[in-house]
Image 1: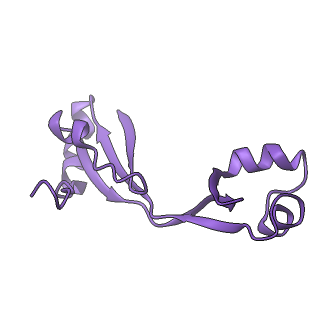
Image 2: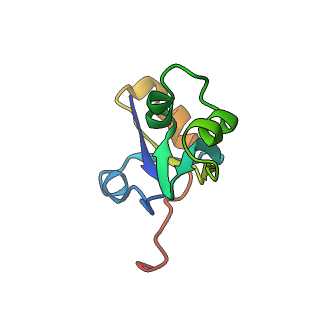
Length: 106
């Protein structure tokens, strides 16, 4: 099987996965994915590299990079799976949810 994700923050719906009949498993919970530093959204790994070995937390980001930095909370990811093993396909079909649709396309 192969898992893939569509980024809710980027307004991606997984249109290609839907068109190729991947199974939609729902959306993940919101999570902390990085920081807003100097007005730009930065991934946690990029911020960590700039901190050069210091712990990557909001206190250090504000102390060393930008006093006004804020944590960025991602809305989550849309989860898709393509199952190739017929012995477990039924299990995932039972977990399937209706495909999300872009309101502009409906």
